[in-house]
Image (cartoon, rainbow, N blue to C red):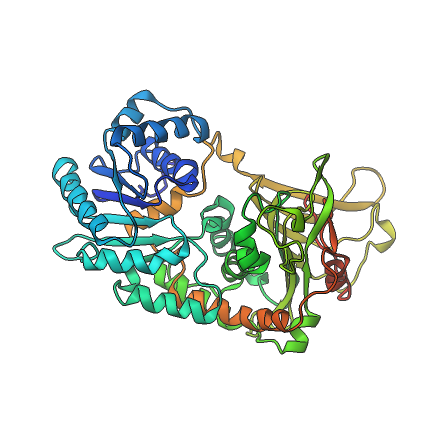
Length: 504
């Protein structure tokens, strides 16, 4: 760490309770993230982990499973001494999520953990379960007295998306959660916001005087957000049949990235100040008419094709998928933000499965100079200035500018000024959850979604979903696996004389 950087806030003693502890998320992300935090010395000495799942399992077997998974899936080599300290603080509590007896056993386990490991009564409950269980678990925790704060102790609950299926269900879930929890106790997690480059958006904007003055409609021509995946639904056919690409990625991850990139500067870096500006931005998204919703959106579903040199099946051939499914695996939309900063600037969002490559990026295209003095001296087609935030898989920031080619004559071409995290020296690979888990334990909610943010995102999405529901697609599948989606997605942006940015 740089000597000038602030010392990280210390995490108070606490226990982490993971519901759904036998699932993939615990093995692939949560335990490796906690181990990484331990290696960075960002966990308290007084700390414990309690797994809760339905299958009976001795503590020792649970520890062995996590140790094996960490060795296989962790992002750094396992230090035997560090893991030995970890495994000694791991225990397991078996029970059904809706059974009050489970919570009696959990209370006993937490009391024992507090006595043995001095966790001070502070607890993070991580709900790595199906969304149907969120309200049930919160209710049962409340009935068992496990959510009560006081005497200096805190209790926090982390939930994973989806936060509802539509506006009505999101409001119902928020009502259920806030009937037993205070809003400050609820941490709605979004792993996209744990990425370094996503976190760097505010620093890049507000920490550099050359960018904030041009971060508006006078200088920005349009903005693109892309979340592309080369994989298919990967065994999640049943889930995708009830969700689709728009609900799975766009309404939550992408709308929240949009809020981060386009919001007004907050009054401070306090969590509530940042979240207040995100809500304002989401509420500024123009509510479209049914006609506009159909004109400014594109749906797609992948057919057979080649990805990575291998033939892959169509979505309708995937397990647990209706052979006549009309669920979208690709979505592209054009949005308008109606505020003083962004009025008139189009925002284009696209996301899809079975595209040529995995990439998440945010691209700002700036307006061209009012007079092209070098039009007759271009070595390649005149290209505008771009600012590109690459969020995954390779994280970095690129500025595309025009420069003179060395030589006795004036001849220009586009060049890229690249920043990547290697400039900070060697970095240990991370899971993307470390920052989020750490922030929850110190009580910083900046990167987590507040209830009004969730509802504002659904309000913006509702007209699109309603228009789609009333006008089912008739041309699925309409793009081949390995392509960049249906041709209509290209036409959506080309009719404004733009083109999709493709990472290369």
